[in-house]
Length: 234
Image 1: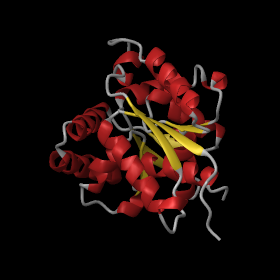
Image 2 (image 1 turned 90 degrees about the vertical axis):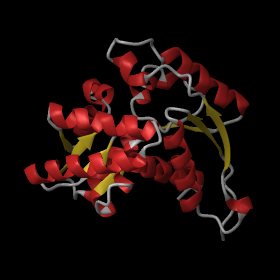
Image 3 (image 1 turned 45 degrees about the horizontal axis):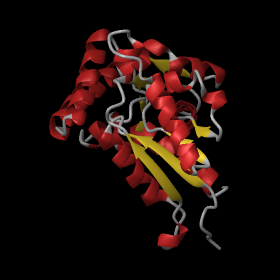
Image 4 (image 1 turned 30 degrees about the horizontal axis):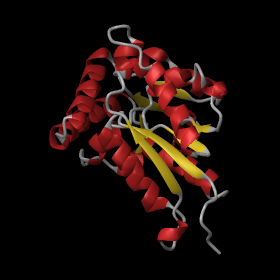
């Protein structure tokens, strides 16, 4: 018999807004609920004024860590029992204080690597992510611990991926989808393995690309699945 989850999920959003909205949609779609009352209670703090994570990581913008840290502690103070942040690059900064958080955090990178390993039967996949996430090596480091491997796009392909992200943030999914289609086909021509969306804007671009959905790993869905597993104690 389905019951309402006892834990309250705290979601830190705004990085970016469209990606967080999609995360909440997936969470509601996949929840083990038969009616409203069986969905998890969610506290959301959306802060689009958080400094750009990639710029901060690459030293060309302000450090977003203080804002991210303050907001996560705020969610816990408001009553969150579990935390989720639908932004991959933010986790580079979160890892610096994760052990200080008063409640557990569902780590999007760990969840996504697990999902990628399951989809590709333990072999490898292409990693599509922001410039900052690629530079941080947060994905390869996690993958190494889990005995998995990511392939890295060329610099020219990385530039196209970064443009995809900007188009999604600007609300231009059509152009983002067209560019995603182009770059993924280039990658598959080099090596025909799945693509892992290590940025929460990229699943929206991929969905608009017309490419087969079963050939990609969405970090949004991976995070949602990991949260639901804990919330419903599966």
